[in-house]
Image (cartoon, rainbow, N blue to C red; front, side, top):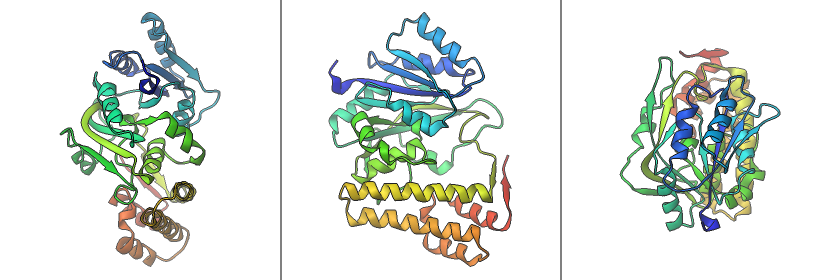
Amino acid sequence: MNKDNTVSVVLCLYNGERFITEQLDSLRCQSYGEIEVVVADDGSTDNGVAVIEAYIASHRLETWKVIRNRENKGYAKNFLDTCGETTGSVIFFSDQDDIWEPDKIERMMDVLREHPELQVLSSDLAPFTVEKGAAELDRAYLEKMKNNGELEIFGTADAFHVGRSGCTMCIRRQFYDDIISYWRTGWGHDEFVWKMACVTRGCGVIHIVTTHRRMHSGNATNIKVRTRDWRIRQLGEMTECNASLRAYAVSRNAGEEVLRTIDRFGESLALRRRLLTGHNPFIWLCLWRRYADCYPRRKGLYLDLYLFFFKTSKRN
């Protein structure tokens, strides 16, 4: 196989024994041919690693391997660090509990070959719920899943917020090498690569369903408790990430429109910190009138207002 067409899959594991075998089956049965699979366990306490090692041995998967982290890194750092352990020219992100369509890699690689300007490519997904208490994906997010074969290409000004989950993404290895030094703590791996690729209008979405996302009570996105202190810390991390994004944009001679978009988002973060660390509720009105679009979802705007008055928010 031509080196430019080699594929690696990074699968990050944390207590994923319940559903991992179905995902391993969907990776092994990909129509693309031989792929490298690197599993990175982030300190699991279940038998997930043993299940995967037995699976690799039973199917004689010589290009698959398991890495055990010495300490828990968190999902984003685990994904990004493990990308550095791969050998393929394109890296796919894999969650531990999804199921891939058998031609996912083949179809997305076809798009990358036809569009060398793309550095990150995402696709559509279809969620399925397996138990009560599972997280739910926003209706507005699901409405974006056109599944009509169309390719959309985005830049910073028209798609600043990450438009797809990491489980639908792949990234060129050379691009990963170019951007990894800009990553900062608190930056989701999917948001990081999306925003970086958008700087040079190298971010695409192919509207085909390639991934069936299992929704259950253990999903990483299912955060139930949010506090004012948590939000303040989050905003501090987001500010550092945004500054790093701007530095990358400057290094790539991005246009004024890109820099204005990044700077405007930075202004919104500063206002949000002032709101939550001060005593002036009228700051929220400014956010509502001028910066509502700087929130990925409108409910985040109202959560900031709630946390201004109350220290904790819980949801079922």
